Image (cartoon, rainbow, N blue to C red):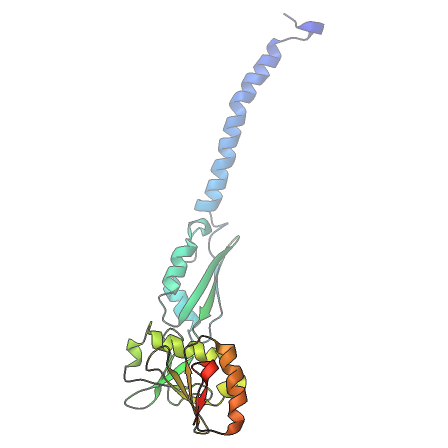
Length: 239
């Protein structure tokens, strides 16, 4: 039987039926091949783990804690889990883990930065960051790193608001003053007090109004006083 114009209909129907069967099979074959390539072959398996950004933490420590095994299919690597493991290293403040296809994992580490030094009873110092986390020990106080005067052990300062206030104030100080600070004492977060190399004492107060306080201090310092109170810049006091 022919259709309009004499074209046989039966062969067309047969081809349509074969295509209906073959196309899903072909799709399944392609999907199976991709699955095998991603999960079962060495084509997309981890061959290299790259660590960047380390200075204090040995690369070998990051690799050991990250626990990314060579040969693991890259698709099975959880970047969030790897990052979580690396963040357990005390000196690491942040980390970004990415997959670089076809066979690399890149671990970009952001280490903590020392902001203050805390003296140890037996000598030496613990260097802490703005969050009160011990970054590293040091036999001597590094030049430019103020001494944080406290009765607490450095190991108990993590998350201390007084430490955060001290670090915030130091970050806002004019450069000429910041380079002269030798020690910081913080009775409370709004009473940050700085001692300078020249013997001058500055009651800075809280980290608020830094620009106004810096301007007032610049005006007052030519008086060569030994004590400046700029905790309230509108009523600054010298002595």
